[in-house]
Length: 219
Ligand SMILES: C[S@@+](CC[C@H](N)C(=O)[O-])C[C@H]1O[C@@H](n2cnc3c(N)ncnc32)[C@H](O)[C@@H]1O
Image (cartoon, rainbow, N blue to C red; front, side, top):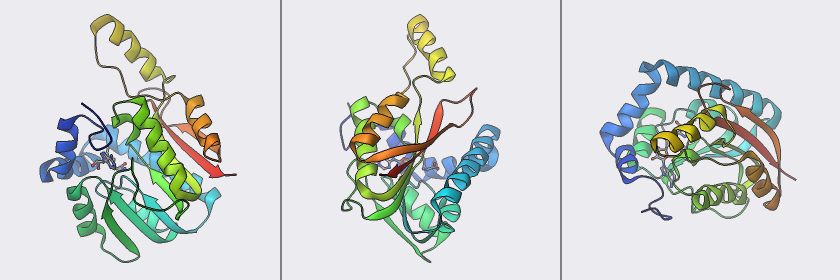
């Protein structure tokens, strides 16, 4: 069952909220080669996007996880807001990165407890593909666009990526679970409805990953 407060598989949510799961997600980025590669590529793209965005007053990083991108984002703003659904992730992040020009809170990215246009840039990495229905994935996007005054940088799993097209074959042949995807044109349409325009949409990798990193600016 999935709804607003229960948007991803219970086992995954439980894992992110447990100390073991949060520590293990953090450790993956030092121990697993594919995680290190994707981290490196995500940082390179994010740095390139921020070269266009410039230094800003506030950034909201939701979900922040254990703070993988915290130091990079901190260098791009005066005040960084780190938020996640998991208390454990938020406290691990705070323990590792401290409170200097950073604040922390627990929140759902599907119901962000902040007013419209209240932060300059909203960053949301690696959440969309965990959300179990297209309604929730679209709601997530709308919440990011509502809260951002200037720019949204967000990842989603592309329906037209090679990785997803191969998965669709396996879904038909073996009954494997489908990926939680979005169509790129649908993301652009939601952005437009919310007053945003797509500036960039780069695949993380063309082969082996379906993630796209998009950058949208308010018109
Ligand atoms: C794959 S991790 C990504 C963390 C971070 N953005 C990164 O790229 O390292 C997914 C995160 O989403 C959080 N999460 C799950 N559901 C959420 C929700 N509805 N709102 C906010 N965070 C959520 C989990 O606790 C977890 O920290």
